[in-house]
Length: 233
Ligand code: SF4
Image (cartoon, rainbow, N blue to C red; front, side, top):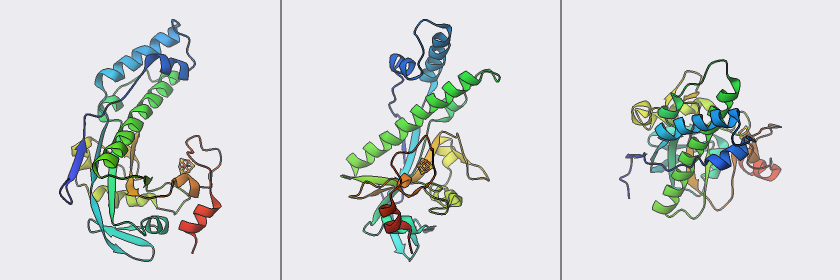
């Protein structure tokens, strides 16, 4: 087990860029010029990509009405506080596609290649987040766990500005895994994700407390019941 407070890095993260499956997903016919250009891009990414993640094992130091404290930092969110009601140990994290894949450039006027590059980097950050989840489940024997991210769910559920607090508990995130936080709370590389993993028996998803319609990334339908349980006064 890791010592309390230590930042742990995951670097050798496996990922799969299966050419046949990717061609099918992109609806590209093998042998066409488009398919060849796409496969060249896949090969460039496969050669350099190094998705990464960091996390900490953190223990809740205080639970207030609408906030929790761990690593000496206060996180203010009623939904987070309620989700952590029965929890003593959490795993703050940052995961990323990595600066190596993010440095790949495509011709500036080629929108199609830009879209492909975006979706391939998404595969990498998903691989990093999945690997982190599997690592935590195995190493800390979590039977079920869920994740919350600053800025996800309805506006105000957990303000995005709390990215700063989250990053502060790791120290030099950019030095460790190359992810930096801008003044507007965006992460660079943009294909990065940050948040808190916590053990739970419920299948909580932030999308259940998000009213946004037509979101292409929605993982679960909005739930009035969950919203009432974690967001209502
Ligand atoms: S529905 Fe979309 S915007 Fe809302 S929390 Fe889910 S992924 Fe985020």
